[in-house]
Image (cartoon, rainbow, N blue to C red; front, side, top):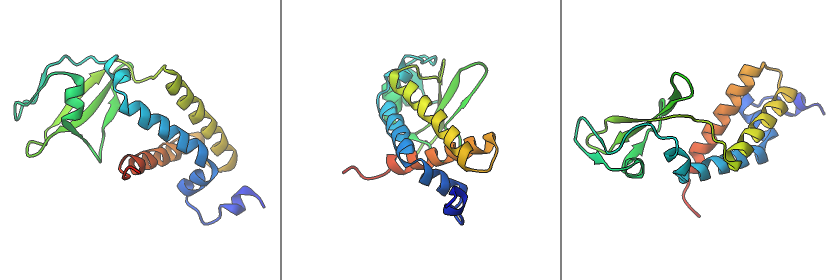
Length: 161
C-alpha cells in the first residue's frame, strides 16, 4: 500500500505525526529540557537586570527571577526575530497587572549538543515529510512547526507522572 493510500482521510498534521512519532517526541523532549535549563538563554541575554514593570512597578532582580515570577503567554507571539539574530521573549506580569514584558536575547541558535541534535532531527523530519507528502517545502516546514508547537504545548501542560 502506498503511503498516500495509508494516510487517506488524515490531515497533513496527522500524517506528519504518524510518520515521525519518535522524531517528534525526541525534538519535544530536547526542547522541554532546554527550556527548563535557563543557562542557554541567560548566556545570550541583552536586557539589563534588574528590570521593572512600568505598570505595577514589580522589580525582577535577575533573568531567573523574571522567568519564574511571570507567566507564559499561552496564545499569540511569544518570541520573534528582530534585526539580525536577536529575538524577543514575551511573558506576562502576574495578575492583576497582566502587562506583557519583553526580554531581548542576542542569538536564538542553540549550539549545545542538544540544540545541534534538535536541528539534525528537524532536518531529518523535513526530508521525510517532503518524501511522503505531496506539498512544497515551505508548507512542510509550517506543518512540522505546527505539529511540534502543539505537542510542546500538550506535554508542557500535561500533569507530571
